[in-house]
Image (cartoon, rainbow, N blue to C red):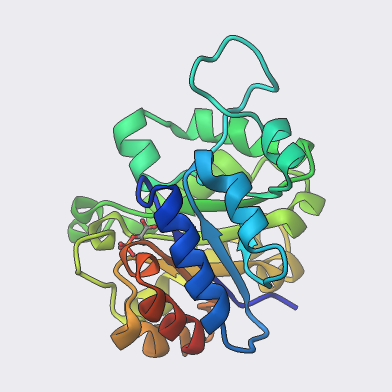
Length: 249
Ligand code: PEP
């Protein structure tokens, strides 16, 4: 049975004092929910976030990691470093990493393999650009992103994978995929996984939608049968908005 998940990607926002304050508010306002609730603060505040949320159900996750186990990679963070402080879920493949840091499918594949090998859970992000959607190529693009990074994995690896479909044209733009567009793509993703692996894996994997989810549209998007929650950017930085989105699941 797949989990419902709401995850907040804070990106390069919130200093230490702001992190403390937002997490304290979130944990005080968190409703009773069966959904998994996660936040991804910046690397430098992960340890503090874990301490602040010690008695909270909110999970702290990382926004990124390197594919090497260790070594001469100035400025990078390894899976072992994350695990060692108590982080066991990592976002890989966010469109900003792909666009601004040149992370290709080949690099993302290495990251996913390293994370899984170290026993981490991966939240893998993917999604088409506006031109792909306009030219009707969005299904092909999504299929190839999945194929290039995930379809060479062992079937057993899928218990540690969460998918986040994030159409690039909807991220941080205020433009949201309609609930029908989200459902159509999520159903396509499940069908593609079912064909590449099997229907059990396809049924059990959680597929989140990301792209300008806010309190006003969350409930309708989450009501779709193949949408298992959301990866939230901007709205995760405001406690009342994030909590409203958690309540919508
Ligand atoms: C994101 O960055 O993953 C995201 C979905 O951002 P936003 O909610 O701001 O569109």
